[in-house]
Image 1 (tube, helix red, strand yellow):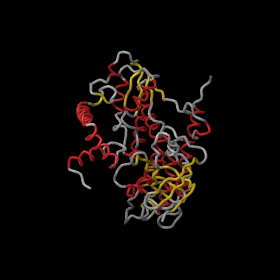
Image 2 (cartoon, one colour):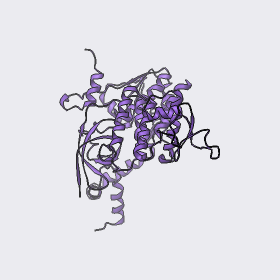
Image 3 (tube, each protein chain N blue to C red):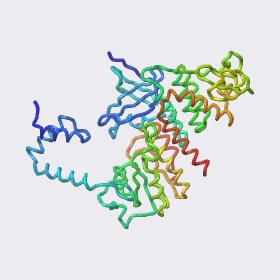
Image 4 (cartoon, rainbow over the protein chains, first blue to last red):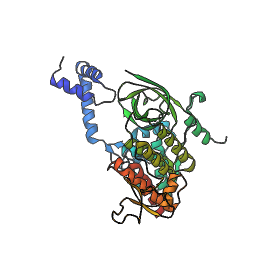
Length: 197
Length: 244
């Protein structure tokens, strides 16, 4: 059966969300219109506002509606430490660990020559400019994939030339994991990066 | 009609996100050549194959194929994982980029697989040594049917180490002073460099440059006009180091 144009339009719009196919879009549409029209209006308003006002933080490039995100604006953070991550979601992940009190820099991706992504596309120049602003140590927390490693290597070399301390997050066995089920490459890294106790 | 392949030696050349939770991986396999395989669920957080399906990891892959794309049914590590670091990693990307440009899917080339395997092993032990890349490019051209004529010169005479040649893809190595009526185009190269390339011998400074120019010129028409990003990246890293 075919829906009226407005229903059709809403269903198609909902499908831009990850994991939403035609069936889920249909369920969401009926739920919003039949059971929760108020929620639907709130959602519409929130979406419009967010898309219109949220941009990038001028310092760390994470998502923020202010020129400086709350983390960068905070006086409590250690300004000598800079943690380089690939995405805003990674900032959140590190933040939730509670183990880090410095500032961040979001690359917005990783070096991936085969996808045509080079140093310009991930804003390496902006990072270097940022690192000159009194940063003492840069922690490279790009993903432990080959692309993430290549990115860390490339950036690390540039930063060392600036005379900034550079470190890479450790790779190893996940907590609560069992060695038996850990893949060989991870174990190799875990052994190579062992620590005296 | 679907074909099932089990525990086939393979390397992932490239991968990208596919649908919500899957990955589409381009694979170089030993007996089946380049294949596009969908790895279902390989982007889910707990996926067991996720850490395995990385470039430069020797794998045993199982898949079933019905159409253009195959579906991954199993992945196991094959032997010790390589651990390319730094420049060697960028050189590895270069090999992958060249392979993806030049290979079509479903064109078996076991010799190429072993050449790739050896090249990665070389990168792991010696870092990004240009000799490794040149040797790989030579073998790749052989497999593709554009192999270099390195046994003798264009006239069928033995190559002489001290002689200068112009290498032309159609004719082979033309002695520089031989053919005054039809001046050779092609790439200027010394006899001993051609001999070293033929014998897979180490290349000295002069030969390294000449052989690099020769292979680049022969590969260029097949690679197409788009520049290779990994080569740009490598040149950039190198140039910065030398200007420092």
